[in-house]
Length: 343
Image (cartoon, rainbow, N blue to C red):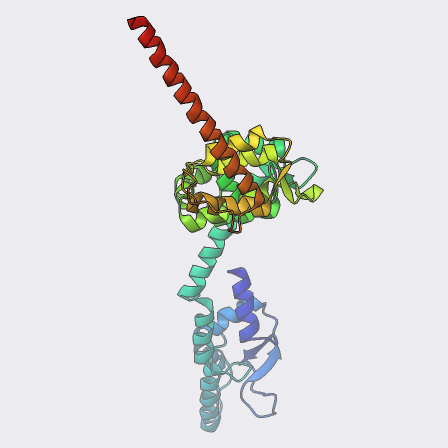
């Protein structure tokens, strides 16, 4: 209110002049109102501009004029005219009534202004809460949340760092590296999920997990996971085999493909021939699980699949053939044993 009061004072009387009716002289030399450099402070000036009963108004002007010696009738008429003018005119030539209305309009903020101020207040308080939350887990020497801070963050969220929830949260935060949140990632992420506290983040988990079930959202999460697993500081372009296996298990937590276990067994049993997983192989595997049936009968090497998929299909078909033969031998051996017992 103090800043607004000073602003109104400056608008209504920028020069610091006020009207003095105690003299009959004017700046133009004619008898009437004299403009004198004000000895009143700015607050008093505004008060007198607003209050018609002040010395700037016609009432006090008439009272002061009554103390002076009586003049001729012509002087009285002239004084009445000047008294009327004193009640209506400010130093900047604006009518007093108009200036008062203008001042009151500036003083009363509009509804939109109030809403904006309220919205800014809420936003500021939310930003402050996010700031306090970030400071709780940030590193002492760097302005980022590192591995130790991530562990404490996950503990407060009552989740394991290897849980699917943490991967989804990292996805919403658009984290570039595992076990690390930059200040920007943390702030933008909290705003994206509309949460500014541990309790708020926990309450958002159910909706985030449901969002990750949507086909288009899951595709985005799936592709994010590959980038998330890379070591950006080393400039990696492919995932280490062990990390890729762990991330495939993690990202398919809610919608596990039927062929996933066979695919991961293939990667585990063939370590020498598989050093890393490229981005193309990672992305195409999602299409593979959606197109190729669990029996692999509709797979064709003529299509543009990565060569690793050709190797996998051959390995899996051979693996199934051996399992079938083993079952047949076991079953046949059991039948022979039962026949011997009968004889």
